[in-house]
Image (cartoon, rainbow, N blue to C red; front, side, top):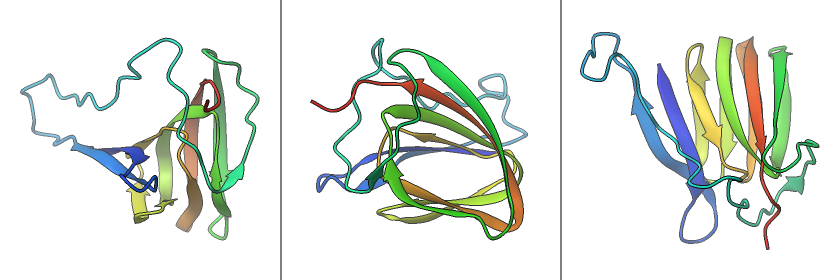
Length: 140
């Protein structure tokens, strides 16, 4: 199981800023990985985006859940939101597309998408993903 955390680089491009792996034999922390803390309540605004803005209609400080099942031909182009997204691949696989490249997520993997530009593609057998969206303020 793997968790990736997104952010932006010095040029404002979306990228992976953290990656954490949970080894099934790791007992040092009770078999857990802590990879993200928003730092404030409400969470800070997202960085400015270049892709399409998608309004997920999540008020600042509130959460919304979504379960999605994607066929193998599913794709969604580059976009950004005013949310922090906690995405967990339940079945199949998916590709998280960032400015720094393509990141394959298998069943059991998760991604924390911090409002940065990103896109999605389903894997060859499709994907089932559980999303939790945390509303953040728009950028200043």
